[in-house]
Length: 166
Image 1: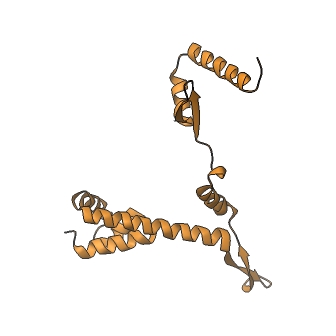
Image 2: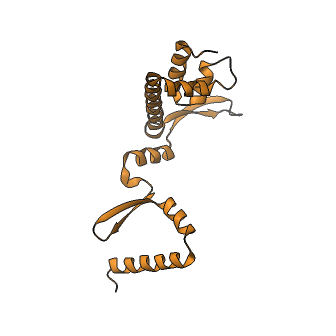
Image 3: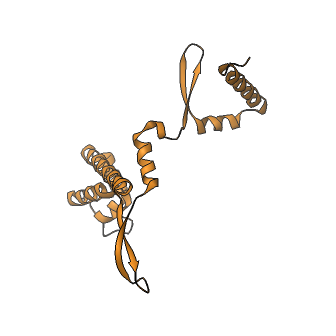
């Protein structure tokens, strides 16, 4: 089935709601079980305006998700409290907050609370290089054992010198 302007609008509106490409494609392609995802991806490659609208929809979805994350973490959500002999009736509500979502929000906003995944290495002459720690460990695993041992010895020595030991 042809990718009409109406299907594109439906896809983009749905994508803006949640940012899930497969779900948006299914909403815009009720005739297809898989939602014609590749048709939309191909159109993104062909049509620069559609690609820009796609990016804008993803930005909107990120905003929606961030807003919901904030609501659950900071404002909290009301949950029903059940009572009665068989807990069959709602007797009140309690506001619950998500510590985990607040943690994610804080890490996103405040760099000092982020997990360290990069390490800056200063070398003589003031040249600084940033390395992804996982990538660094992968390289180390590929090195011969003697080289790893030598590197470890040099790093320990550098740390001793930094701490004032001789």
